Image (cartoon, rainbow, N blue to C red):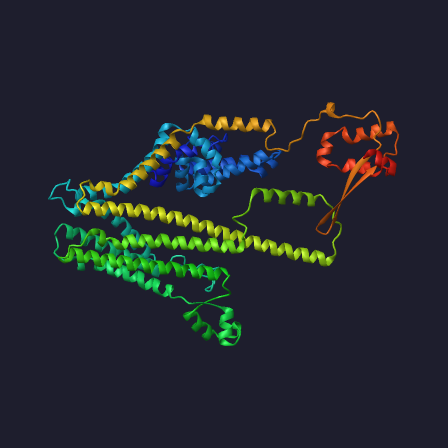
Amino acid sequence: MTRIDLAFISCCFKSCLGSTDNTGEESFYELLGVEEDATLDEIKKAYKRQSLQMHPDKLAQRGVPVTDSEQLKFTRMKEAYEVLSDPDKRETYDTIGERGMKWLEEPFSMDPEELTRNFASSSVVDRSKIFGIFVAIAIAIFFLPILVCLQSDGKFGVESSWMAILTPLWIWNAILLIYYVRMVMIGASKQPENVTDDEWIDPLPFSVRLHSLVRFSLTLILEVLVALRLDNSISLKWVYIFFPYYIIELSIFMKNRPLAQTRIVTIEDLEKALGKKFQDLTDEEKYVINIRYSVVPSKTSPEFEAIHKIKATARQELVKVAFRSIFLIFLLIQLESDVNWNWWFVFSPFWLLSFFVCCGNLHHFSEAQATLHEKDPNFYQQSSVDSDLENCVDQNDANVDYGVLPSSAKSKQTNDIKNESKDNCEREEVKMEMIQAFHKLIASCCSQGLLLLIMCLLVIRIQGGFFSSIWIISPFIILASTFLCFLGCMIFCVSTDDGQEMDACQNDYASQGVGSLYVPPVDNSEIIVPDKPISNIETVDIEKDGNNLNITKSVEKSKNDDQNFKSQIQESLISNDQLFTEGSTTCLNDINDMEKPTESEVEDLD
């Protein structure tokens, strides 16, 4: 019987793995010379027989030269035996093939281009399976909310039961409960033998797993009590119905309160307060200090930033607990007492909480901007012209030979480079923090806006709005439908023609020299050789003195006759590619060999 996981992979990911291996090599069964329904004994006998024929030592004894192909074939035959002799590996091979086995063992070993080509050449049926998975997930997510909305509108009749309507929720809770119980029954994680006690950190502590089980159990009890109260099966007051919720909020408060009150102190401040070095403290003193404070090397260290983030997150959680508690108090007063408050006022803690969440993220983004402006004041004032000028200066400086610098100058230059590199790294880190803060601001504003929209629809419906309750979850339905539409277009519109056209375009660009070094064509017709010798030539000498450039113009006269001068000009200008690769070095070297003109010749030239 085929395993469920293999059947799922074969059904859903066959389009990416390909219908066949298409490797051009023999299958494992062909390498061993057995049928696909061969027994384990037949596979063992076939392996022994093939080993006697294909083993390199046996081939050498028979005088057959052992080539690389023979060695590779023998290695594949051994691999085939290892797979087919193992029942689980053989079932995997029979279901998804050799390529699928490699993908399961090393998911990132598959070439993305190969997966794309396989998917583009797959059939419509295989693509429909992938699209069907996403549709099934969307239906499973929205099935229960739609049932709740229809029950709220009374579409199932007066005698319908909330316990029956919430059947999908009970099934899902049963699956999660089994999972949490199983995680607790595993017990404490075993420490590896090659890891010491100081280095060992339990990736999933037993206390965390136990706390998750207790919290989920309280949530399940709350759901059952609310459903029974809505069906009027129990007559408990709502104050007692929400008792499990009180315990959950209290546990969140007790967990985050110490973190929010964490006092961070640097080693320098601690040494000033105690009057001695931190290394000189005893283990007992360090233990007492670590209980009361969080000691970090400095305020610019990564430890300080990590603890500061944990502290800020804990404070945010405490604020959320406070607002949720206020809302719960308003809700209980509205349900249990004769006070008839407006529902917009009952939900006011949510409006304020969303506002404070957005303001908090905006403040964090402003702080990141201020830090970046402090590190790099010209970040928002940089222009493309400045960068182009800097590039030109760098290129000109690279072509100048400054000679050998003194050792002191070299040391100073090395220190300047190191300091500049360190400053650049710090600026890049601040830029990344600002970008992350901006993304967090956008995400929080969008999520809070969607939450407020749903809350507004809910309040309007409770206040007596004349529309179906399904409109409350309509924003999620619209987003999911839009996502499925785009996903369907991406899945069904991809074809092999697109890949062939892209490859053809790449080949055309490659044939035209795109992406390679451009070499201008040589056109000898544009090279003009003067009939008479050029007697006066103006040259420019550039010398660098520190950070200043000294430019000197001079007029020089050729000392060669007409014929020699023509041949010299032709040798310097006949090859344009030398001009592009060597610059003006050839011309300047030729001109430097010439004599300076007399004063009368200079006046004639002017």
